Length: 218
Image (cartoon, rainbow, N blue to C red):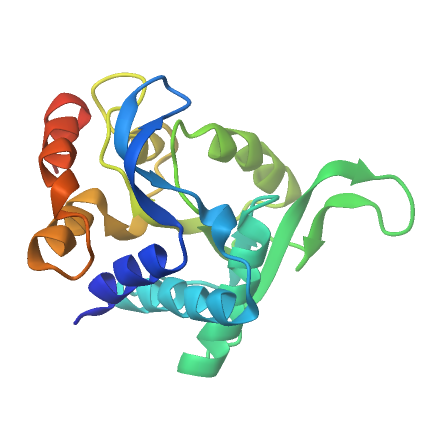
C-alpha cells in the first residue's frame, strides 16, 4: 500500500473522510465529506504531519518556512515541521497569522518565524474550496516580506469546479501563480474504494455521478 492509499485509510479511520449524503456550503449534494476538524489526538496529528512531510519530499519542494493560515493551518504547519525534522532531518521554520493584529509587545500579525525577502515559503492547508483563505493570507504574507512561495500543500484536491469551469486548485494557480500539491485527489479516493482499500463501494456510483456533474479532469 502506497502512502496515498495509507492516507485515505487514515482519514476514514479518523472519521475525517465520510461517505453518505452531505449538503456542501455551495449547496451541492455530495456523496462524501471531508472534515479535518475531526483530527483530535496527538497520535493522529503526528501521523498527519508525516503525510504532509512526505508530500513535500515527493514533490521536491524547496522550503525554508512553513506557513499555516489561522486557524486550521496552524497545527498542520507545526505537525509538518516536526515530521520533516524527525523523518528527514530537515529543520525548517514555521509561522502563522493572527486573526487580529497584536498592538503590544512585539506586535504584528505573524507569529513564529519573521519572514524575510526571498525566503522560500510553503503554505500548509487542509482543503481548498473557493480559495477564500489564500486570498486573505497572501496580502498578509506579501506585506511581511517579498517572499518566494514555493507551493501550497493540502490534504485533498476535490477536483471540483469552483466559480467557473476550473477547479479551486487551478484557480489558485491561474490567479496567483501558486502550484497546489495535494496529498491525494478525489480520483485517488475513488480508486481506493474500487480496490477495497477503504469501505464504501455502495457509494461508488454516486461518487462517479458527482464527478461527472461537477468534476474537472487534469
